[in-house]
Image 1 (cartoon, one colour):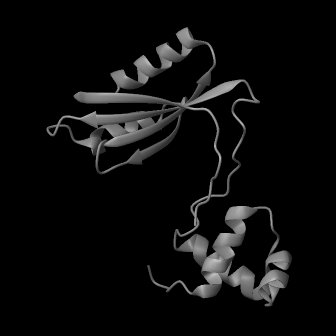
Image 2: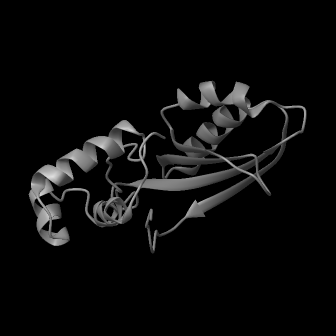
Length: 149
């Protein structure tokens, strides 16, 4: 990364993590600076890949869906990098995380509440991953806290 992150950048990130809809003007007022300075910093944060995307966190239950997390451990011979492109293309998979520890991959799926349909989706996803050693399934019932910084 070319530019160093400073205290103002971290404050901007924390504010946006709580409310990504804040305008540059609102950020400037909260931080006691100018809209132009916020604009320059935001451009830099985006350009340097520190801010990857702005998104919405929906209430899946209210929308009639379930949120399932798959913890997947693959055999040591499996190259996780070769698996990821096929998983990225799957529309049921919402988050893919490489991991170190109990699992090699953490995959978040948003699917229908119908168990047969959900089972089909989980089976389809697991077929895309050769050499699964262990597969843990966790149903997320409620997101109590979600902070990114």
